[in-house]
Length: 111
Image (cartoon, rainbow, N blue to C red; front, side, top):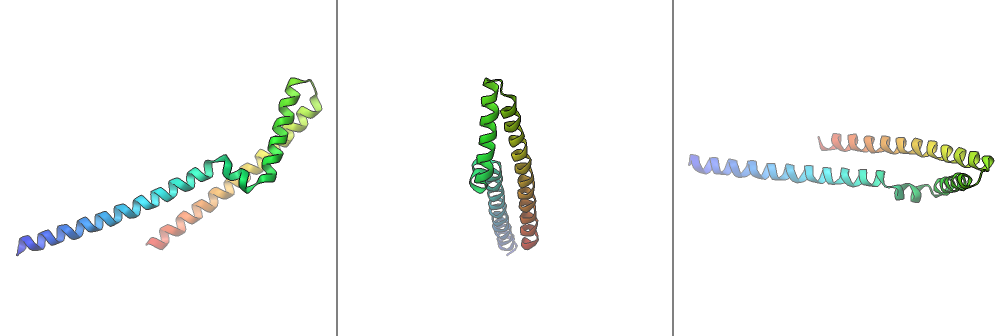
């Protein structure tokens, strides 16, 4: 009788542990996928195509000025790249803030 109750209790605990492990694995998997998406340059090129084009233009102008001594185009290109990178940095912080907020709201929903 006591052995049956003990075995039943062990079974219940193993089921709870398994459910918790699967839930945590799902949360980690979702977080890992989201982080990979945030770190991918393709995400930002798709989301912000105009900024990507401006950055490519600026980088091209700066690189071409490196081959020729055209200071104006090099300055313009580097200025464009700096401007775009500043905006990308701002967008990245906003994206990380949204990710953080989503994570916190999911944690409160699970409780």
